[in-house]
Length: 215
Image (cartoon, rainbow, N blue to C red; front, top):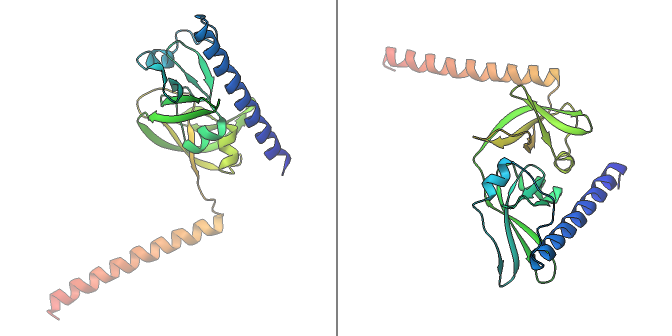
């Protein structure tokens, strides 16, 4: 296992542990009638989560919230860290509605239940101020480190990025890494396209000539 993979794995373990601890604190606070936990003040995701439910079920505790690019924010403004590997593989983007189920065994299960409208853009992957970003639409969109490693992307790669259709966001999700072409390959590909177009054009001319000659 490479050093980068080890760091990513350690980061995922830390995030999972933080998520479990914060959820446990929130459940304890609810049971004691307290209101503890990290809050997000005057946040669009908190406002969107205000219409969601937060209730117990027969199988455990169920909490609904909105993904903000890194975490899930519930209607009280409490922040629940979402495992980066899950967010990356599920291609979550800001605005997606999530459901967190805490089972009786103490497992934390996230599920996307309300995906926001999406669109895709293309741009190069860069590394600025300790984070990976994709430059597109005259803006730098942040992406998760786990997403970069999952798709084996490298700085300078052109990637397809998923962002909200109708909402402004500083985060996006990598959908795919575009294949690289050398200058020689690009030239060969363009030449092949020209040949195909020329061939089709000749075929049409031949057909027209046959029609004129009544062959």
